[in-house]
Length: 62
Image (cartoon, rainbow, N blue to C red; front, side, top):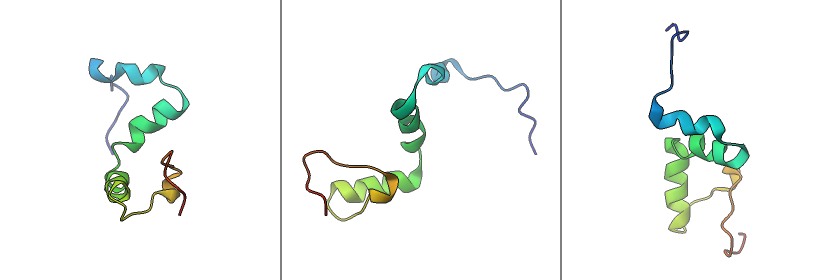
């Protein structure tokens, strides 16, 4: 197991310390390879994203 006691965030990620709610969730979700694959399929009409809790405004629910 790695000791993370001395870990410091890089300057590129300091903005996440100020995010709340949906913005913080998005930062984690958008990096998930399973989410990215599901989103890509859903955008092209061949996938399902309901289990991610997402919706596409303006698009009828299935």
